[in-house]
Image (cartoon, rainbow, N blue to C red; front, side):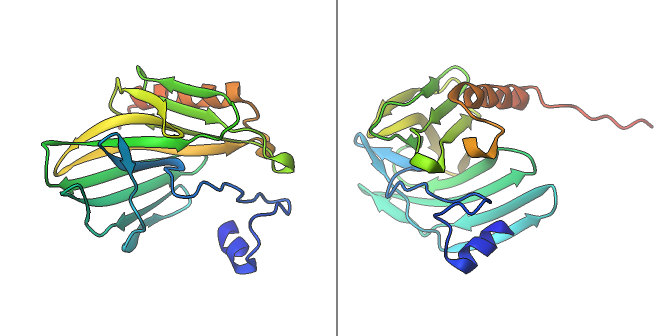
Length: 216
């Protein structure tokens, strides 16, 4: 895999004709992570404790990560993420199973880090689409990041240097959403209009999934 090659060479912040990783965000929600939202503050979840590969085929890759319980303001939360990516898709499917103490519904947010420079941002509460076209990063090009939330309508806001979708989850339940990105130098999605159009088409396909019937 290309990532194995990059990490083996320890040189993945420079484009050698195969792409690169220049996406630096620090302790944030990055390109579509999820966090607990308490007292008007995003509570970030740290590194997972274990991982498991569920699928590793030519059409789909799926893995699961589990986190140690963490406590915010007396509320203890245990989280498991199952992430899958289909061949040819810009977005991964993310299912977050949550067990928590405290309130019947735990407030959470899915978000995208915003840069200081002005750049196109899409917050579509009706369809659950959160999209962002980053400022150009010199010769490295431009990245688009986005999320599509299954449960709609969903309140959204621009705050805390993020674009955020506000969600809630009962203990023992799950939140499912889709997150991913595009790079203009790949040559397929090269503008904010093209990226937002892709996200809208993706959302429409989720709501109108094909039905396969097998004749007897």
